[in-house]
Image (cartoon, rainbow, N blue to C red; front, side):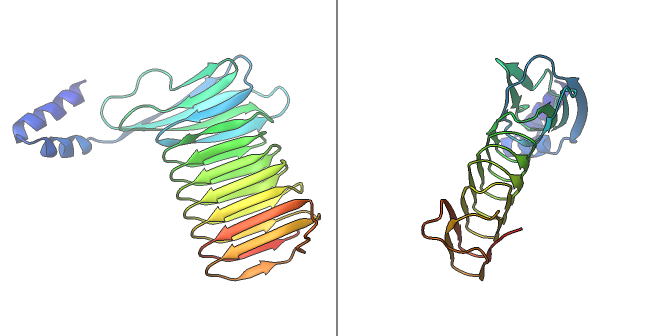
Length: 243
């Protein structure tokens, strides 16, 4: 509260709002970190973060379910929890204006993860279905057992050991690098960046389109193949190969 009053005083003294806002923006950045044990049954994770990111790790067996939160802010320190559990859904929320929150959570393996963040990276490991988006940041996926839909406006998308039924990855600016554990349909699109796809042996219908860059397709294009690989980049190499 004292910091807000100081900002208000600056505005009055300066006589112009613009000057006051500039002074408030120059408040010293602060941060803190806290840890919590998650109790109760957790069946899925949903991101509603705003500014910040999340790392979601699936834990096998009866491992401890936990949450670590790192909060960076200007002005008054945010109070209260920024996350909650609703009917088994762990909701990772934001912390308000002039504030960014980053989570590291350990949850049961194989559960779905969905939602978005406005600015920040998303990383998931040993989870089920993934449907996530960020306006700016990396999306990284490891050991995913369900279908995937990953979107970022500005950032790289990486996936390793993806074992779902289908995979969709889209970024406006960044590379897409994917390695599949099981044959599946793949749609990958970037406006600026290369696409590198590793697929298991199977029959694939391959469509690879790029405006500027080479194509290295080491997988046979089978018109009667069960699975479809639809790969598009406006600027960058496209590579498809087996392990």
